[in-house]
Image 1: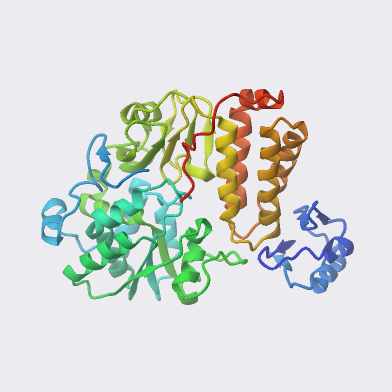
Image 2: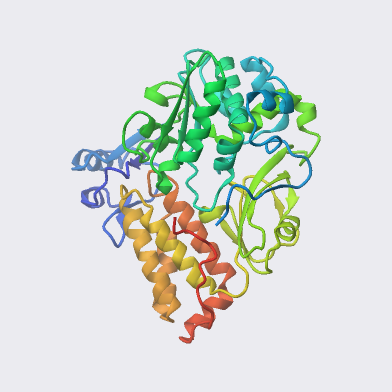
Length: 65
Length: 396
């Protein structure tokens, strides 16, 4: 069970996550991510991991619960 | 403006029994505090379904059970009453400090917690507590600490951060104080009134405590009534009292009512509404009356709420600013403002470190529903012809 999570106090709206995991992350009109909140499937996991690693603010994480 | 002198009781006075008393008088009024074990407290709280009185209405028994068996570091009394219209916690701290201290100290002994911390942001409350502490000998490290007065600084984890000497803002990671609280150690934190109720519950026992109020949540509650009322103030009532009874008691003008404060919900009509948690939240009842412009009042509060954001989270900073702008445009009759407001209200909830954006969106969403007639009048471009009187306060 994997899900993307955002630490909103860190997120500065760089927007890289939306480019790297477009199926899960959209950007709102101010450039901040909107998560679909779905579970990340095994096939989407590489994209999601890349998005987490690319976040310049270290605000994105992949939680497994 | 409510002064703490305006206190009244519907039914039986419990937490408001014996105000302004020294320790001796306090003990004569309430009797000595029985020494209870942790299991006793859990059993009592479970039996009467006691819920936290700070707004979230979390069951106290569950919070107690979530604490580890050993190593509870502190009991924290959150007295940083940040809702601008709420007065109940300040009232208890300034005029019934011994009752609040009894609740906190009794629980700290039961949990074997070495520290009791009381966060306040009001000089009168701090003075009253320190004077009360001079009279007592509780064999605990009890500290009264001043925390900043911003709206989101009253959030539980923001208070803990302030107590540790940090900045009073909610942290980005969601951790429970019962697991990682004061100095990352297990902590029991609750609202001032919760501790006063615990002190009453410890003395009365579950049967005595349940002699009034609802079956599901017996006992009494403190309400702050303000707005377009003749007699504003703090009232102690049994839980589940009809809203209309309280409005009549306070001499409220007929009109819409805001239940639960600035993060609460507007009610279109008050018949049949019973005041209970979670709807009543921190116990704030605001009457709007009929001589002020509802949309103007709501916009005024929205502006205040925007200013109270800690500025940490993008969707809160930009979202609340956009909403204030949407409501301002809506008020002057721009239909695009109405559309933008609805879009932004859907975009903000759940996207912040604390519940400030969610609560603000809830308040504004219910306003658009309940004040639809007024909104339609404003959309004609001529407005509703009423001035904005500022009956909701919010300039503190």
